[in-house]
Length: 327
Length: 302
Image (cartoon, rainbow over all chains, first blue to last red; front, top):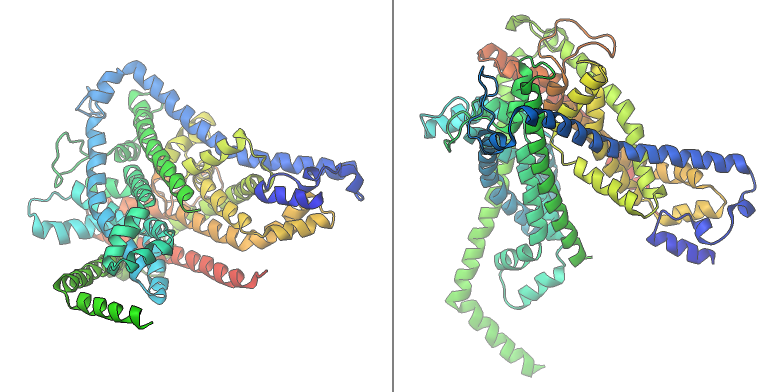
């Protein structure tokens, strides 16, 4: 009886083994009596409260974003906000079309993906399929350092190295602030994440699959690209989507290196403004609570929040599918 | 035996010699070098980044830079106020976020019943980990600075940062609690311990190195975060040192941001020097985390 209780606990750790075994706690409780059980209940209540702080955070985020955004949409029509192509929030006669900011975000994200996805995936293939254990044990920490570098540092790097020393020599008409340099820096920033998550997905592919492919005469490169990568595809795609979500939410690199001029056009060598950099730009000036400019921050923030949330949900769904296949 | 070995030998030899196999092998070798080059380029990017920063900032780095307050004159400006602000924010963040985070992790792993509420909690935490940090800044500004009227103070910054790192601490905590073998809990229960006694005296001590590692990594992320504090009210130019949680403040990354956004070269050099200090702090914290992982990871055996 007691043993069955423990087995149940293995599959559901939340169930107390004593109650699961069907024994009333009073018979076993030799020392503290009611006092001890009361303490237990108090502790479990405190722990539940700790767990619920995260719910409060979400409620707080949604409430503050939606609350201020609703106030914003009383002043500005949603049609103008979502379909307008002019964003001049801080002018005397402001236009509130968010599309230039969304476009700015997407331009930086596109460049970042062009850098991080191929390089990250190839690095993951190398680490998972080719590298020796000693090489891996050196490279993984290097990638971890790269992932731990604060984004402000990448921003500085983009502004003072990538733009003048890499882009200017190739494209002489590059602006001091431009989407391309910010995108490259964001790409370098998310590269370790793509590499390490994709590598995890590839290492989870059972080696029997590789052995079968070798037995059919595949070379190492063929096995890696035609067997391991397709088998790990959902995990790899999940890492890509998570990377996109990180790039969309990235702030400091874009503020520093891409400037603050909303553009409705695809010129990667010019100054742009992204959703995140608009939020920061308003704060480096003074903004008065209750004004449309203040509320517009939350409308832009809400747009950003919904975009990243959708990307994260898609990524999680893909990962859970990939877990089902190999466990 | 011979029946099998002869055809196998023939097949192998003919395949090895065939031009198809040779070109496939050559292609494989080229592809493998491309993979190596991709990995090397990531390492190279890190090397160039570190070298660039060191090259620009090392000359401004001295003791007076670390202790001086901010100044509009580049040759007198330092990061003293910013370092103090970072220390305030991180200490308070640790005090708020670690108990909450570990409590939530213990609840989810040891106490929570398997029902819809727990599932919501769990999904919610992993989604919070993916919310852009600037959105936390908006939360801090809207709720702590304005609605609770705490203003642009240290406590607003610390509360904002705590919420930002909370999901990271919870997830790391859950992983290390889950790694504690079930037999340990069963042994304690068999001796009549209550659930809290099992958790407090048996599960938590074993899980502690993992929890600490995750916590240090979460706090080192908080040290490097700029956007949320910029939005929630850190100032870039502060000439007095904060001495209570209701004072205005600045932190190291925000100070670096303000120097970077000035066009003069002298301030860019100061920014690079600030980045060196920031990276050294982060490196030290990460080394502590790695030592924890190695030291305690090896001791625990079952």
